[in-house]
View (cartoon, helix red, strand yellow):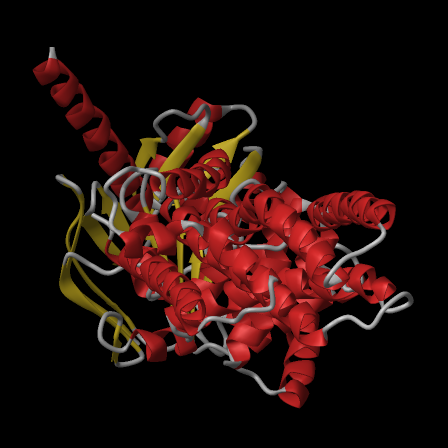
Length: 323
Length: 242
């Protein structure tokens, strides 16, 4: 659905993208994760047909973004980081206007406007002026305008930026709902954001892909788990070490009274939930107060922090070189 | 074409959604009203005129052509620089339409606004009908001249606005550019075709005498076409900014 091959972009002498290559398959939600200034927005702009690459190719739905940009634009719904809204307009009129821009006929437009207003939960404000809406509503109205022509691909640039936690949850749910029928690519500099919504993650740093991982398919359950205890931490640690089904116990770095526990393969034989419930019951039975059990997400987190660290150190070296 | 109309319609409504559209209309009507009062007063005091409409229209349009140099760029700034600045230009840029569609939409949006004002302003010359039988052809020519003059300023304004996101520059740019153009007509030694073409005020007043010269018409169309083409070039190049 989205095929990017050797994408390079220069702004003057400054190379923003260093030959990005990735693909996103139909119906997938792909997260584009990277620190600020890593080239996320530039990539999004190129995918939406707004910017031309300096070299390399990008194809959306089989159409080239340079030579067939009209077809690309017809198939892509784009929500830039700064949502494009005419603040003096009424929500309904605005979405209708975008439909008109995109060449929808009047009857089709009416139906489309009603559909997207419902889909994005903004029906209650359809007669209000956009400038008077809260940021969360504005973001959703902008999303409406990106969806009105029923795009096959949705490109979202930092969709939850600047929203309060409630609104973030709302937008996330919305994205998940929209992703059922579409291919979605979204960018973010927040790890948890990507973890919450995406199936595939591309970590980008300084214009190059640092890693590509898949967040699904980790269902094999042979993952380490974090156990946190409210008290008797050392007792709990030694108790866990002595269990036959545990293969390793380590203290969680940067956290207090929490351990990362690796289980042996046969432990999961009874099923993931049952196995965890069993071990929990045993812990409580032994008088050890468990306060939290969660999956230990090593891969993505450590990758992302490595990326951030490497960026910080390279910034230091450039600063040192400049001095 | 549908997209152009959509943009023009939205921009037109947008002018009235902000104080700008109302203030500009207020200024234009205030000035036109005062001028009309003064000119007819003079005319009545003198007691005779060969063609009262041509005289009134000449003064009215002649002066408004000056004023428009300062009013029209506010509109081109709004539809171009302001949209580039606020990011709403992306709505148009991400739609599957051509850059010409966008340019024409913006151009005709502003032209439509000034046409409405121009039509409403016909109330002044129409008033003269109560006293005499003026020449309708002169009226039409004068009106056409004013609209062409506005069109030229819009095209120049759109081009300069497309170059910058800075709204101050995009307002003052066309004002100074046009003033410089007018002054450049007085440079000694400039070829005649040049001095004739760049003096927008001179060109505009010709029409108020009821004369529609093909050459003047062609110059206006050329100026409008050239600057709209340049705007398109600038907007297209934004895709390839390096």
